[in-house]
Length: 294
Ligand SMILES: [Zn+2]
Image (cartoon, rainbow, N blue to C red; front, side):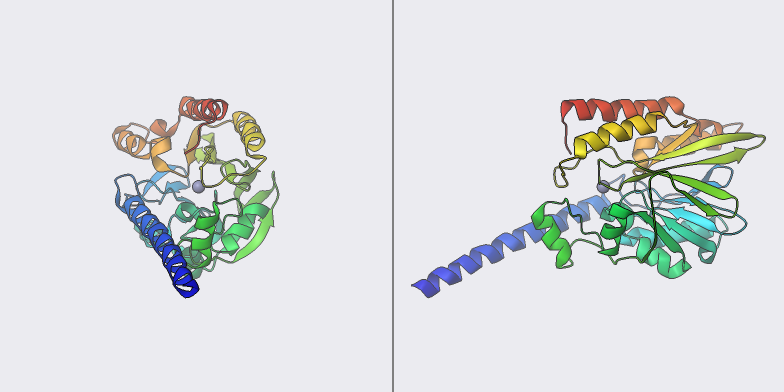
């Protein structure tokens, strides 16, 4: 009797685990295949030495310089090969990528970093909170426990990259003449990092902001989250963004701007979008006030 009871309990636990695994796998599959996911996308110059090398939706950027290049974000583990193909298509060598950066360590942005690191030998820089998560292969300490458990057993998560350096809010990362400022703008995750830097277009210098995801996932919550988001929105409002991007390409209008750029007299012009940047922050603020989660 007791034996039967234990056996049926085990069966229930097993079935529950299997259904969670199945749900997650179906979710990942949908995420990977749906339009706006991680399909191949044409790489292109945004402005000056700043290029798009990401997928249809999972953003990745290349910033080139005479002493080595920088890649920001790695997409999913399977996006890395698209990113490498894009870098090659633009005429650059993955081996010249010296620094890897990350917006946030969820699998859609941190997943491919290990592959990129292996191919390039580049050094990865991360904020303290992101560093821990990246180095663990995507464990989110604020994540929903069943999802964390799936990361621990290797169903979710990704090959862990080696984190070589940690930075603090306001630090600058330099590769020759390339200078990027890190803004730790937590909320989506604790260590989410926005980046600002300038690019040259002819005789003008344009400011670029790569802004963090400012939304909240129901599966990733922490007590100081609302205060972090409040602060992050304020910090980002204080940055001048002639050009802005974020980790999901559909949010900053990758395709629309790419198409407009191909037809424009100055191909940089369609990427100059301070109004879009303000609208992104306004929408994030509305979400925060309404307490919306994703
Ligand atoms: Zn995320």
